[in-house]
Length: 625
Image (tube, rainbow, N blue to C red):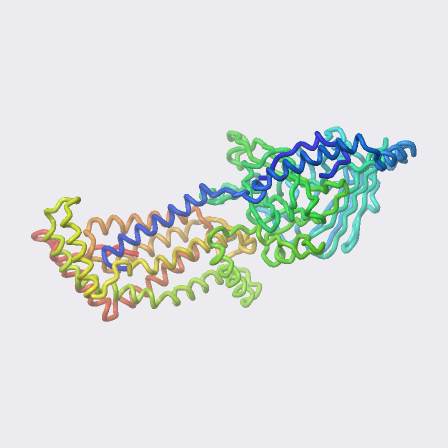
């Protein structure tokens, strides 16, 4: 993050394949892929390079600013005369309300309830979204907000002043019900303090805010705050026990963009009361599906303060008596270094089209800068995940608003993808058949060099002869891995899409009530285990020891089923669809000329390995996915 500054040192007005080798390769690739995902998720952390690289510059700028202020004190200063005149003009007339009132501003997307006590937001309802209990989603986390502050409250570096600004009874321009497009203003004045807060609303999720705080005629740097997380934070919901935290960053994050470079930071790493004077295009708090972002009108003068609080919550939210554990609550405030703050606030879903339409202020002073779309975190798989998301959405839109259409879209895209990969699967089977044909020659070669030690130089001769045999027969030792190499990126891209697509949140498919959550009945993981076992059972794989084959035929489905037991049901739906397609393809291949020859070779090799007195017709598991 950028350099931490302490503005208390400044004055208030300052600015500033099917063969045995193929099977082993598949196992290796699968474990490596899963390991890579876990390592990536565990060690993933925001680079924060852009802010950090400017820390030294910011320090130099602060020193220069302090020197300029010292010079200004000793030199004649017209601003000082102005300040004197303001003091001679006498106190500001008192403006305050006699009682607390509320004003509700509403459009098709939100319903925001303001209280004139502090001119803050009590409720920020998103009409098209519901929480885990089915109620309209409130972006205000009531428990956290009651302790740490409401949205659109003000933050200053004077605690007493901050308290006064957020507890005073402002005079509102109107009360009751207000329909957007419209504006709402609040005014408070007392004891030399003059505060005006004006909010503007249109038909979008974005609202405008302008804040002016003056004390004895001098501007006070007062920042507009979103201090206490979001209303859908899963760490506060009893339904949190249903969603896995395995490789899933469900908790809040801080997100920002500086000079076109976006970054994020996990809640536990956010510093409390850190001041960041940087050209922020936007900064905000986000979780998996929603965000509250602040966009300054003048990025070059933006100043941001970050907040980090903790609340002790029951370890099991469904059991209030369970052991307590701390939950991070983060927030931020944004203002203008000049003291006159003007910004836009977006509080809503992380939906691609909406976020793409909201842009920061560019160098031309118009909203032509970076969009908020970067708050959707696809990670390394963005190059696949973004087109995949667009394809899923386009297919869903073609099918219309049906209740189960997101699930059907996942199934159809999976079928299309497997059909596209069918030639590679056939090529893999042909490569495996070639490997089976030369396997007796390779076995004879291994037997020839069986007495050599591992470090014997002659073993290189064996490897050279093996490669020569494979080259002679046109065999690619890695041919069986090609479909897996192509499938795993799609798997991880699906993972990222289902992790970030707010459209899949609470999307239904028959008994699945939320495709972003694990299967509540665990039917899909059980089916995945069964279909994987069947595919391995009917697929010939004579290159491995039968005992080892049987063990792996059970282990791999069990591992995959256990993993997807905790993952989003939409991802499990994709995997079971692929398994069923693979099962159908393998049955068809087994009936083909290639498949029959492969089974004959497998049967002959199995018969040779049977112990004396064994039954040549006994079935063995030909385990391979």
